[in-house]
Length: 221
Image (tube, rainbow, N blue to C red; front, side, top):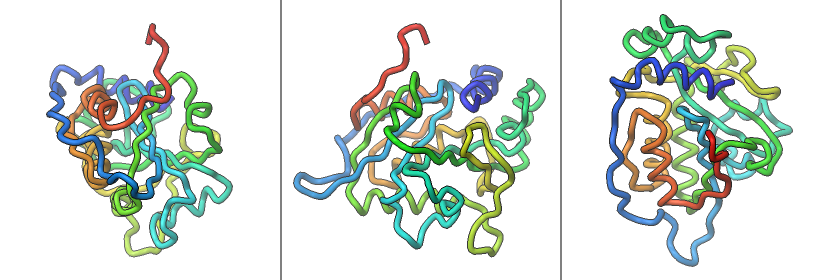
């Protein structure tokens, strides 16, 4: 459902959202022989998210994960506050998100692996990171939560999956700063040479060169 909502938004404004992928300059931030861990880029149609193993998250970061204590993995995506949480999307909400966003949210999903089983039918790209790169990516997510002085951001309510929640976030959604821009910047923080883009495909195309596609979407998608 999250993918459908984001697709509706981007289809409504896609003509103003054109972006090109830049060159991929290196194969990844982990050096040969260095211990690595995996993170996963999930392609939800026009929307992208990142999944990480909860055990790989440093204990002092991302305190909101305590809401998902039984989850093996956490997948997170960022978007406009009103549009992302709306039970039904509309052109009015899409235009408001694109041109007059009043805030943003993070959508966090907790689940048990494997990632390809949980996100069956979606493209999944595995990306290898050094421990330092992984920690920088998690720090990027950690810093996106709007905690308003508290130790953890308070949940805004349930999300679109059985075990998922919305949280207040930092940043303002716009045509130049979309969920896909956020995903690309998270990978940049981890050390990958990736050019941010407003739409999903340029980000996914670069991720395919940086990592390994472990699940492809159906051919008719």
